[in-house]
Length: 221
Image 1 (cartoon, rainbow, N blue to C red):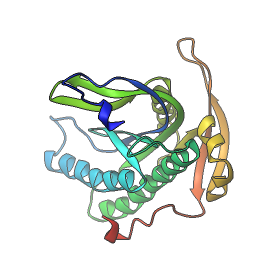
Image 2 (cartoon, rainbow, N blue to C red):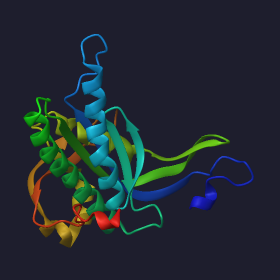
Image 3 (cartoon, helix red, strand yellow):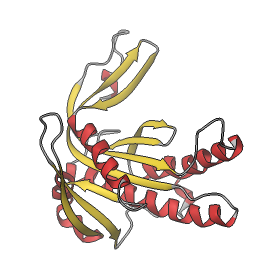
Image 4 (cartoon, one colour):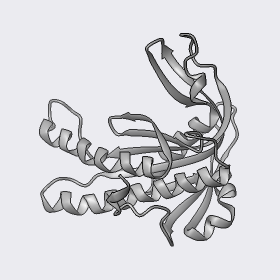
């Protein structure tokens, strides 16, 4: 798949692939230049980045977008295609690991007088269009489509709930299959259709019974 990114100076050809997309948003820091303490805003962003990047990579994900408090990653495409059962498992564990990271981070932030940061996570599985977007010399591999939109909508629903909420789509829940025992699956609901689209079934992941990756093992970094 990497070979399709640039061939003879051409833009990458788009491909239709199945993947699991994670969309997260970090909130709790102010970016109002007139009111915010610039050093605190920068520190908050750096605190977030310190945990987000290794969590995504260590769980097999590819970081697509990291802008301000917005995070988009996809699983099961690079370095090789993986079964949806695997990408769904990786993404769901990554979402829960993000919550764990921010819970621990907030203990330190509050102790030093900084406000806590909230993370909300939406995860969706399905077909996407994948390819290199941009111009020669500045290509970025990304994923597009309804699954990406669904992950963002699910994240927005998670944000409207309590802090540290992880919601997964009905498709992701289906692909977890026998691995559901690794999680405490909670409430089920449906997001209303939008612009003629279909409703999205969602499940809340309230916890997990085991970890996929031991993030405390720095020897793998």
